[in-house]
Length: 326
Image (cartoon, rainbow, N blue to C red; front, top):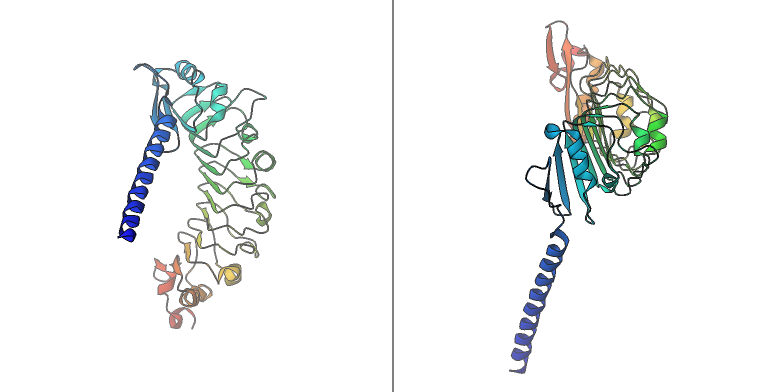
């Protein structure tokens, strides 16, 4: 009987504690989110919504850039907040914006992000810029973004990737995606400090060379590497050395005329996906090592070549040894 009473007491106590915890959690959430969004009127060019971690503010240029900047200048919040700006012409953003955790710009013309000399971004961990035209060099404007982790840039003119990139961006970046940036040159050492990189996407640009020493010697966290739709004809023999966790490699749409087996030797123990389609590869015996590579590792290989005899594009894994190696 005493044991049963003890069990009942323990159950009631547990339920009471859980109820207390739930009330505390709900009260805490309410305390965090209540009043987070500014009290803008219905004609405001900006809208604000609550997220799991804070608030998200979205502004459009339909009503004019001046009204947007004025609305942002009034914003005072102690919670993490994200900012998305679309279709705006921006001279410079107000100081309040320096506290954002995420900055997304779409179809904007920007003289500069912040006032000269005010480049501190203490909370900025993510930038996404699409179809944006900058009058001033972009990278130095991000020099104060010490916790930046995620960079996604598309349709933004960045003629070269060099010293400004290396000197301005923090070493903790994990994700870099550059698409349609008109970049024709990647300089040695420009990303050599980014030893925490996990995902790299470099696509749709007129690159002719990618120096291996543009990247860190050891990339122990790298999971995915995408190099596509460039003018690059080959990579240095040691390009994939120092990438012990690379699992996804995409080389579609470049100008590779051959895929040398030795180039991929450092990846044989851990690569899971290899894509090399839409390159000017000729169907010949020198490519059939990929069939052995695929069988040994059970790797997913998607690679194509051009058969000049049949004038057809073929999957390399479908090529027959007796035909192409006789």
